[in-house]
Length: 130
Image 1 (spheres, rainbow, N blue to C red):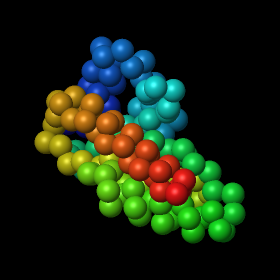
Image 2: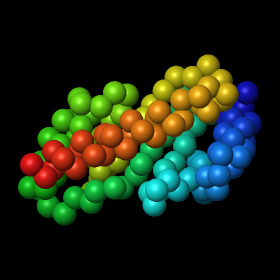
Image 3: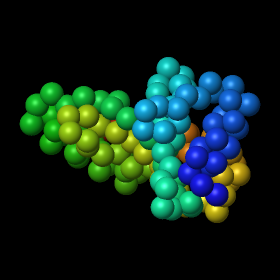
Image 4: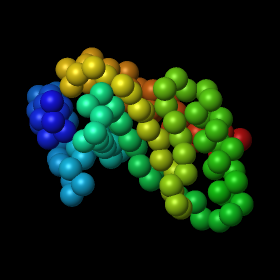
């Protein structure tokens, strides 16, 4: 199945679930959940690879803070199943990356993926606090 077909299938499922998905300039699916912006990113060359991203949730304002963010990201990644927290330039991102055999599997894993992503962000914030 082509990337555009997979995107349309997922976009349609998300719309039916009430998420009001949009397609951004890069062709990624963008949705709002509990006030946060999430992106579903697919690749042309790998039909089984799915990425759910929560971008730019913590800005990095100094080198000292960057070091603290890296430690907190490592702690959150190590503590949370499937989720990764990492630095992108001056921001902190979180993602879930999965290999799924079909776009239909996306709907079966979506809610748990969102939950894990939110847990990784909570774990990151707890590590930053203390």
